[in-house]
Image 1 (spheres, helix red, strand yellow):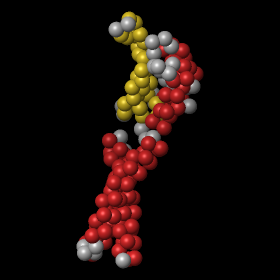
Image 2 (cartoon, one colour; image 1 turned 45 degrees about the vertical axis):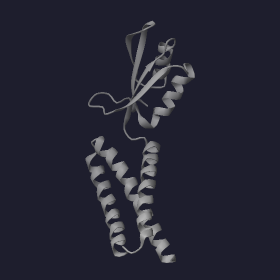
Image 3 (cartoon, one colour; image 1 turned 120 degrees about the vertical axis):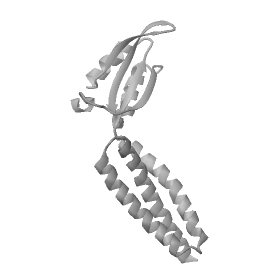
Image 4 (cartoon, helix red, strand yellow; image 1 turned 90 degrees about the horizontal axis):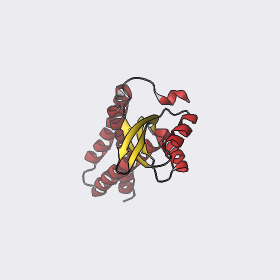
Length: 172
């Protein structure tokens, strides 16, 4: 019984590792980082092969299947958590403030973030739309800065894959 539980835990651990790496690999693929994605894929599959090999060698142990499934679920959670902490890539923030657009833009520029201010019209009249591209690892900090001036500002965030031109993170 003790060996069965250890085997299931081993499988669970291997699945947590390979699925977490797989989550990161997917993000690397989307961002076009092909060599890092290839390396991550190689490690991911190698771990998976060892896990599935162990399962096939011990097919009579049903607990191994639970270890496999639990490891898969936990690997997804861990992979997403790691990616959120690392903050790979860039995010585009779109900000609309009814009263403090220029104050927000001024403060962000003072903090060395590039901001583009576009004229816009809303139902209540003329507004400004602020656009900025930031490294994802700085996203929470930038949002906190915006909210320190206008905690009711409308903010949207989307993934950004810069094609060419100035990368704002290099200003810092």
